[in-house]
Image 1 (cartoon, helix red, strand yellow):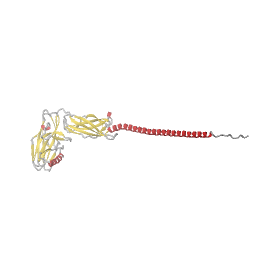
Image 2 (cartoon, rainbow, N blue to C red):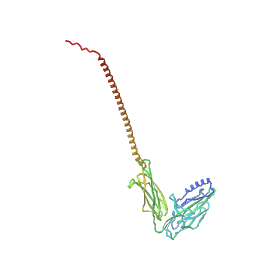
Image 3 (tube, rainbow, N blue to C red):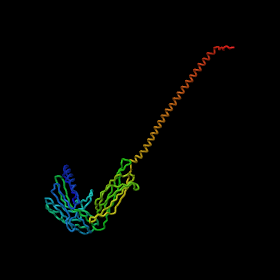
Image 4 (cartoon, rainbow, N blue to C red):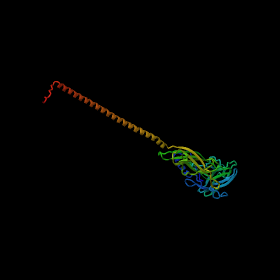
Length: 395
């Protein structure tokens, strides 16, 4: 089990040293924890290499890790073999530490300066350090002493070899560690319990008023029992009354969580219909591994929550459409009224013009009649002085 190097920086590091330091740390991070039965740690220049493995004894000849079932107050004695593949003699520190799950879902062990309460406090190597000549091996005995008041359940940690190296020029101190995992199950009532907590769902809309969007479901897996648990996960979204069901894609299995540990999960869900109200359901099936390595699936646990999935674009369209229709109607009505007013004005002008023309025509007629009457009167007055002689009678 190759563990993440512990590092520290000296106060004398300058800007160039700091940049180089982070580059080296990035390289060392790539050599982080690997859960194998044996492993090797190699310096950057390749001059330091060593491996660790389980010792062959009554517990087995080729074990991937140390695993025990014990009673409170009992002891277990075992050994680890360390081999020096370097050209120089190695002096390695020996100690045990509690395990924890990293943000990447991998097991890591506490550094030596951090206090351990389980494996790290109960496991003691036969010596605090070991000196190994080039090409030689050393068997390191250790004892697991379980307190009488130990709580039943699972404990995980490891036994480690450590080599501290420093580079005063670059201001880097590196604690390169190599160890083997230790799993311990203290007898008593085993209560494997996994809870789904803080379940939330957030819907992300789309510009298409009739389209589907995406959602994000988040929750926390909390190992509330006393057993080491992993689990398979499933997330489903539904609309009102269980309609419009949408399943999330394949979700990676949760890592093994130690008792009391939590793991945050984020699940994207695609092609979700914005049905105003969404119900999110997270289903987790815990998996319990026994001392023989076989896995048993436990009763699934579920959690549900609701969240809004409002189709804002569609609502905006629905709100704007009547307003646009009303505005178009009012605009057409106003234009029609304007056309009617213009038509009425033309008719009124035409009528007025016609009336004016008629009035002018009547006046001209009256004037003409007056002229004729005057002429007739003048003619009559002219004839009043003329003697009219009747024609002679024919006999």
